[in-house]
Image (cartoon, rainbow, N blue to C red):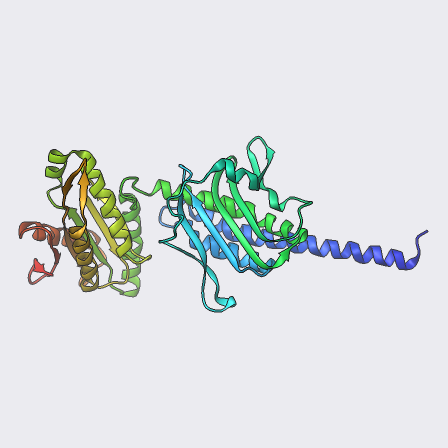
Length: 364
């Protein structure tokens, strides 16, 4: 027979262990539910598994476990290069959230898989877990967490806390990694499926899906939607004289310039060949035209070379918005932008034009 006080102590310890296990499972279930909702939405082309939302959920769940001074995530492509970096930003500690850093020094860097394995432990032939989270490791203020889906590296996460991260907190963090990794893997697969490989812009199919969604919002709320169509000037001549490598270089660089000029809410796609389209939600044509002309100026100033031979690239653009369009006129929006584009071509190229009912072609 154990003393009554010892029975009571063991009971308290058991209750405490049960509460900790319940809290751990609850956090893992909550994060999994939030992230799996995003995964389910990824089956619909018009609704992306947005990495920003995924990482906001993950950061919120991790900061519920312990205070964090750093939450740095490096997304890795299929060639094992870092293609996206997310770091914490915000004012006070309560406002911190992960944001993408488009100018991070590590972008494009090749991950050394062999070096990274020192942070991972092999659990099965195709299963890797962060070794720093395994039982028996001493407390630390910094965690290096490679995230594997099977044997494929999806991302690399570094957590830093002002407090030592003990074994209990490590177990809670580990429970969050499976749904986070799964969601990031789904997001990467979705991006591959809807992205044009050469330009890095969205596919035409995705653009048309988003145009349908924004059109429905326009009909319901009345906020203007604009479309810009772009066409690289004399592109066939460029391919014929300098080769398709020069054309590919022009398309790739134009995609980069276009992405850099747009807001996160704008949708840019490669519409076909040397043609591109941009959807500007809740934007009037004049504002969209200003963006189109900045893009035009940027590509005009860009120096190009192939096999030591310099060349220049220019683009023409046409812009139109939903002003005066009714419920059955969605294709008219593209038709107007296309007319404005051909007006830019017909009047000398390397210019941006705005469609107008009174004057179908108007110079910027």
